[in-house]
Image 1 (cartoon, rainbow, N blue to C red):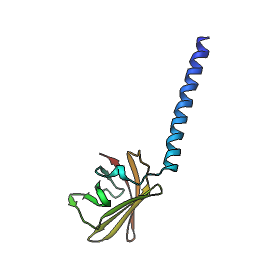
Image 2: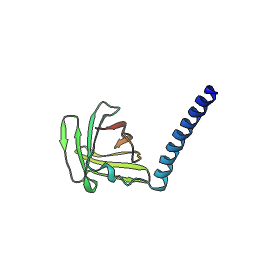
Image 3: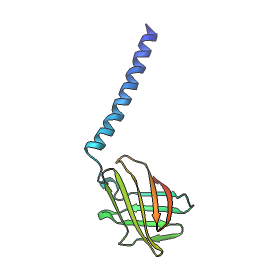
Image 4: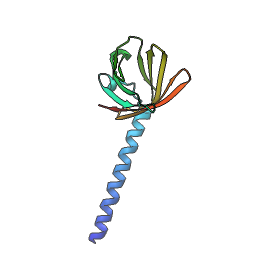
Amino acid sequence: MTRLRILATAALAVTLLVGTTACAQVSEVLNPSTGEELVGTTWSGTDSDGDEWGIEFQQGGGVGLTFNDGVYDDDTDRWTVENGQIAIAIAFETGAASLTGAYTRDATTIELEGEQGDATWTLTLEKD
């Protein structure tokens, strides 16, 4: 009888975990993030080319940027979140760069694909 009780408890725990995860996914589909929760947060990571990035998501869609050893806060740098996708546009002296990837409101990691002219790279940002 004790073994049956342990198995029943384990099955209930797994069911609750799966149900909770499914609710979070349904919530994101029915009420997708617009990115408001990103405002005031900072994220950092190293891209596939070895460059170090730091991004501060500012109110109104602005971006504060650290790139390698430089610090930038250009009014033309912008971010948006729409339909589960984040897009970040950065104006470098060598040309505009765009970063795009999937985003959900509870993310602590964002996987991005970057492009600037013919150059491409990947960047994983982690919430600081």
